[in-house]
Length: 263
Image (cartoon, rainbow, N blue to C red; front, side):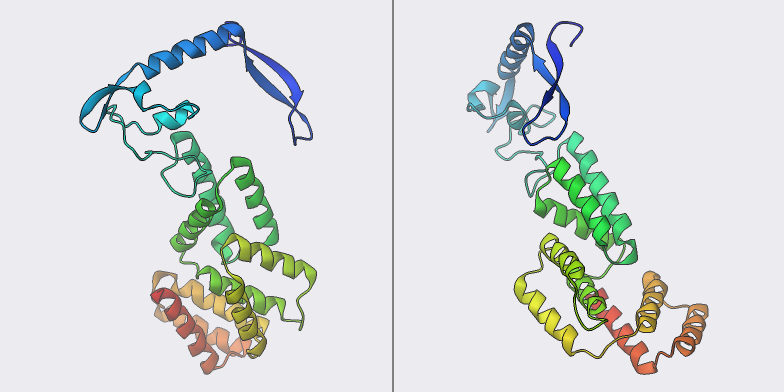
């Protein structure tokens, strides 16, 4: 298009940006070509409520042209509800180009959730990507839940509770831990009431050692296929003896896992 004289390219400062960005601007010829293309598109005949109508009769300025086209299916039938949706909207199927962004975020969440929790660094990276894509928080939350469920990761409330327990290991929650908890809580829709309830529960629960958490992680790994084999059972029994895990603690971990599976 630049070679055809339809647009110009320049380096300019963008409001809110720290560096100069490449800016594309339509020339006068480019604007004329764009208007001609728009008129041709609006003249297309489409089906709406069983009748053939010109697309322009369904367009209300200043509705963006791409938003208008998002209501058309492959058979040139106009639907009152958009068939695709920008990622800035909470619901709806993303457009083809936006689906790549969704898949990227979904894969990032899957990788971050592999160890059962999202660290501060992972959350920071995810936030930058989400902000760059302009993705709606509800859509982000849905993608995170999809990734978490595909890996059989416990619900956010359970992960959040574990994070609180770890933060309370030394008897107090420092500012860095508060920031991480706040980020997780806001991002995954954990309200203040749930936070207070889980915090109170954590403060009143008996302290759990690092050995307990390590054993619980081993049990979760063994239970990923919904069954503990004879070999896994023997390994866990040996691990209990090595880490000093009681039968009662083992049963508690198993009960917690069963409750998670039932949700």
